[in-house]
Image: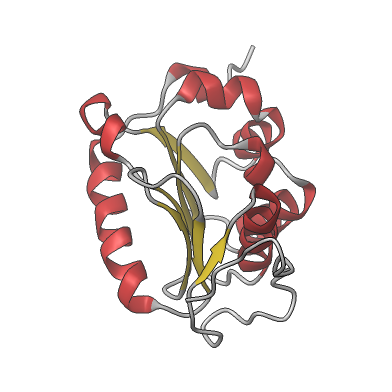
Amino acid sequence: MADLDASTPEPDFVDCVLGEDAGTVRCATVGAAARAVAAMAAQARRELTLLTPDLEPALYDQPAFLEALRRLALARAGHRPVRILLVDVEAAVRRSPRLVELARRLTSAVQIAGVPGEFAESCDAYLLVDDDGYCLRRRAAPSPWLVDFANPATVRPLRAEFDRLWEQADTPLELRRLHL
């Protein structure tokens, strides 16, 4: 596992290939984590799964990530390739208007729901891409982000946890588009 210190340049993840470049990297800064999620999302072919406290704008309300999400949603429309679970829906709507609006426009491909209240305090934050890559921040240790572009063994239990939460989640009123 690579650790970053003040003398180590932050990774840019430009050359990382989803499903091939195994090895966990610690991202010590939000900038490095944002580059990782954008690079990973850009390579998504089937699905993108996100569990986040509030759509963390520094990571997910950025042009590179939004474009990757839009491309996947359009390419896989009807298959519901993007699922997002939020811990704090109100904060997400307020802080990440571009991602929320994209989800509202692409309802056949992007689903957003709220984490059931009884689980909100125990959720880690993560992005899962296809069956291969993840970006993970443990709730117990909120820094740094852990990133791996090829680790199905870690993705599987995280996806199982996400699926359990998803089955109990609901779509909050704040995320529904009002047609007048």
